[in-house]
Length: 124
Image (cartoon, rainbow, N blue to C red; front, top):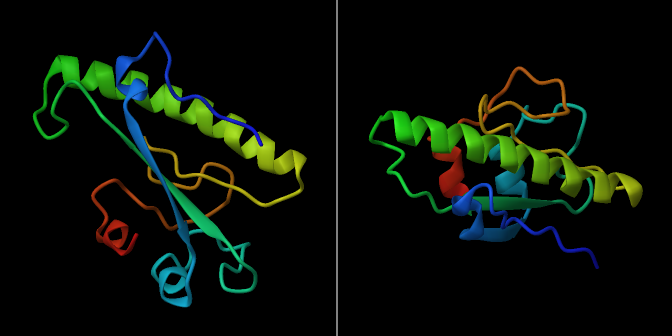
């Protein structure tokens, strides 16, 4: 059992987050078809892990402070997700994550993206 702490003094927002694990059903796999073209999400059991981060500034209100907070959070999330993926790589289990800045899979070559306002998130 490994823990992946998301709290860090450099970015207060990562101190408050919600992590959920969702089993991939056939319906869910169809919703994300093409996102990870090398991986058959229906063939063997998979899960989707979602991370929601509490921020100080409203993300819908554009401001310099919001942009700075957002950039810092994105960098820290990617750093933590790289460690998360490394854990599964060591266990010889497939893992990838969505780059929050682009909506593209971080390690998979895909023309499909999942941006933060994508309606497919509602299926999770």
